Structure formats: structure tokens, C-alpha cells
Length: 525
Image 1: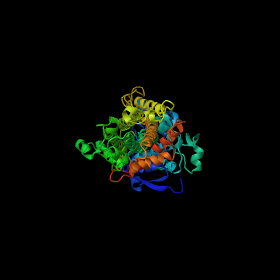
Image 2: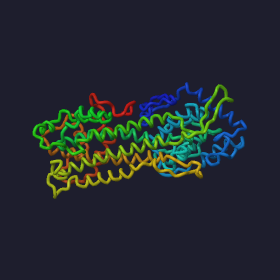
Image 3: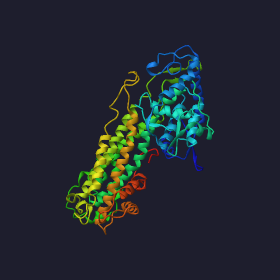
Image 4: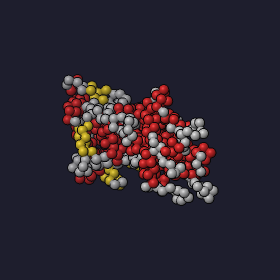
């Protein structure tokens, strides 16, 4: 780990969003709360007793899935766990990003450390050691249906912990064993139930969804800044953001978003210039209804954040181990906490919100280039005809918005039975969460195009200035992309503007607003 790494104590079942954000960003050393070790030991003792007993216990001395009725000899229990991991490591596709793997390692360790999974402390210690060493297991992103847990990707994780799989070193897929040895980490040798506990669970789906949530919070905040800048570029009214309007509806996200727009637009000389003699009674919906649309999206994202935070702290493997006063009194119960339906539905809700943020931004771009609505020069160019201005930049935005609409189709409504119909309803949560990354990229590019277009609109209104906050956004953009009075190669400017959306530059202007509540509570903002 880096020399400036800080230590974050994992308290199983009580990991806040602020800590997940720190883990996602990297640079943290994770340490397990010592108070959790007693529950871990008691749970492991129950499994040892079950493994030595005559009664069949699923996942301890039986086969898996459709083979649950097959009894396994005591001498073969360690082989059973090893074979489970090898047979289930069948993922395909690109590897999970390091930031996702960091969250995965932390949440898997935290889940097992709650003391209901029957694993020895060494399992959890190894997960944390791998994280702290900066080792990133190579985990193919595709191959999970989100029940019974994220089996294939978690099997790749476990195989790496055992020294048989691979790790990601600067984008290269290399054998795990030498990397573990160089870090002083002993490869795991699995005992009864431990392989099953490691691969059963929703941690991959949850980590992917949390990655999307934490990334999109930045993009969402940027969208507020850019939408406000478009209001001024189109000489729109700030009356629709009046607090009294939104108080009457009572939707919390709408109230927060309207407050942000009011602050962002406060002090605009452009607004003052047309405050009295504005002949447009009402602005287009893409301007006027931003609090209603963006606020509803915010409420969806906040709901998803609450679901995902619960899931990140949950015990989601199977079977679960409930220790009693003594080993003999412990119970091993089969259930279905591995079914990732909560994650799937939360991810689907996020997908719709992400698509809507991009969709209304695309409509604002279309409005800006339409001189009959924006009252700006056609396609935002001073000499239209000779120049095409933002004509085709809008086409790109439309293409991305349309792509997002297809990607927003709910993944959770699909289910394909697996394991010879033993696992006859699955969540598809892993894809539901994984597809969010592409949607966020698309929306970021749409907003980057809107930022350029809105700034070009402001250029036509000079020497009038927009608000102090929005002038700050304008200046930050102009440091990266100049005005476009005549046509030029625009793709590099789109990438530069998109980077200001994705890297937090635009979002910082919202986070610094006085009197505006955070978009997300518990540190996600």
C-alpha cells in the first residue's frame, strides 16, 4: 500500500457509505474489529462439529445445487471445497476494475466476519491481506446470474486466494501464487464449507452497483451545474425554482434540486437583463421541469443507496450457521439470502435514473441549437451555413441517449433457470449492475456536449455575465476548450468537457453551495 495509506476498521454489519467511498477510492489499509473474532470462531466450531457428524449438512458434507443429496466422505471434504472452486471459476469477459475489487474484498470480508458463515478467521484475514497488499485478483465480469450468489466471479476471486488463479498486474493477467508469495501471504487451503461461503453471496453485484452509484453521484451533481448554465444561455426564467412551488409538492429530491438551481443561478446579470421585459411566458420543459425530473432521479438514487448499503453489510451466503451456547447446540440452516433481487431492482432503478438524466440533457442541447426556441443563432454558430456548429454534436448526444434507453430495460424481469432447474428463478443482478457503467459513460458524454453548447450560448450574450457560480464553471471549461466561433475538430473538446463532468470538477461547484443539503447522506457526497 501507499505510504500515506490510512487504517479503516471494519465493523461487520456496520460499514457506512463513507467508508465504502474511501475503499472505492483506494489508499486505505483495512483492519478487522477485534470484537468480531469471537463470533467467527464460534461459527467455525459449529461447522467442524457438523463435518465430523453423521447427519448430512448442505455444503459441508454434501454436493451442491442439484447434487445436494449426494453424501461426501469425511476424507474428501477438503477436496470437495477445492473442486467446487475449480469447477465454478468459469467467468468470461474483461476483468473487474480495481476499485470494484477493493469494495468486493472489503464487503466479502465484512460479511463473513459477522460470524454466520462458518469460516475460520484465516479466510477473512487473507481477504484483508490481499486488499492491503494492493493485489487485484483477475475476476472476469461475465458469468453470474445473481443467484445462487455471484458464483463464477467469486470463484475466480477464491482461486486467486488459493494461489491457483490469476491476478491483475498493470492490466496483465499473471499467476497469483508468486504475487501472493512476494507479499508474504500464504495461499488458502480450504476446509469444510469455506469454499461455498466464499463463492455464495451477492458481493460482486453489490460492488458493481456501488461503483456505479459512487461514480454517478459526481455526474449527477455536474448535471445540475450544466443544466443551470443552459437556463442562462437560453435566457430562461428562474421562477420555476422558487421554493414555494416545490414545498407544495413535498418530494424531497425535488426540493433539494430546486435549492441547488436557485443557488447556482443567484446573481446572474443575464437573468437581470430580461427579468422585466421577457416575452416568453413559460420555458420549455427541459428547462422549467429540471427540479421535477432531476429530483425524482435523486430520490431513486437515494433509495438505491439505502438498499445497497444494507446489502454491503449483509450476510448473503448459504447455508447459514447459528452458533448456540455450545458447538452441539449450533444450527446450520439453508435459506436464500444469496438471491440478489434487492440489488437487481436497485440497479434497474438506477439505470432508469441515469438514462433520464442523459435524456433531459439531450433535450436541452436540442433546444439550444434550435434558434426558434433558444433565440440564439442556429446551431450556435455565428455564420450558419458556412459553419455547422453543434449540429452533429447533438446527433452524438441523441445516439448516446437512445443507447441508454435500450440499456435501461430492466434486467430483473429476466430469469433463466440454472443447475438443472434447482435454481429456477434468478435475479440477473450482476448484469443489472454491470451495464450501469456504460450508461454513466454515455450520460457523461451527453453532459460534456451540453456543457460546450451552453458555454457557446453564453458567448453570444456577452458582455453580460452569468452567476458567480456558473462563471466559475465557464472559466473551468475555457481552460480546457476554447470558444468555437467557426467550425473545427470538436471531438477533443467533447472529451475535455466530459472529463470535467466525470472527474468532479463540475460537481465541486454544487458541493460548495451554501445551505444546500448533500445529494447523498452518510458521506457518499
